[in-house]
Image (tube, rainbow, N blue to C red):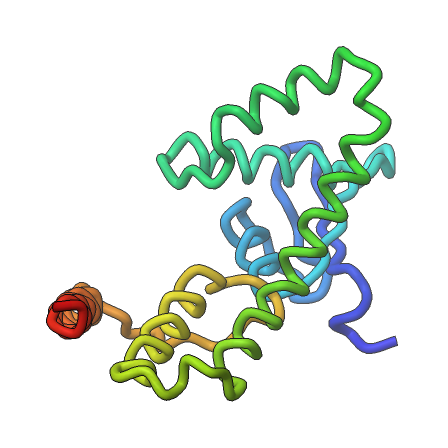
Length: 179
């Protein structure tokens, strides 16, 4: 089994400090979030009791990101999650969420593939530019997902301004074609 295939073991000491057993150093929640974004599975256990605390810490990471305004989960989803803890739906929700995220992971590669394959719209003026912008958008949206296409680390506001300018030019061309 490769090193990336087995979970990274993090031990929680009585002082609540988190210890990375591979690198023999202490880590923060943000470090753990980084490992996960890099595609690594983690397992967090209490050193004294041996209890698996992974779920508790993953929820804490999500809560911290949400509280900083890095909202990913719409309020309706959060509300439905709370409701699922008090209803019979509790048994189906975990499987549904797992399947949904799996479909999203699979779909991201299919979307990129569909954008690059030959299709009838390829003859449309400006299609190549539109396709390049769609790919840039998908790379940005999927940044940090395991298996997602690599992104340029130096994406700036200038890139966004350039995309907006090109989109405006395409809209002008399309409106001229419709007249």
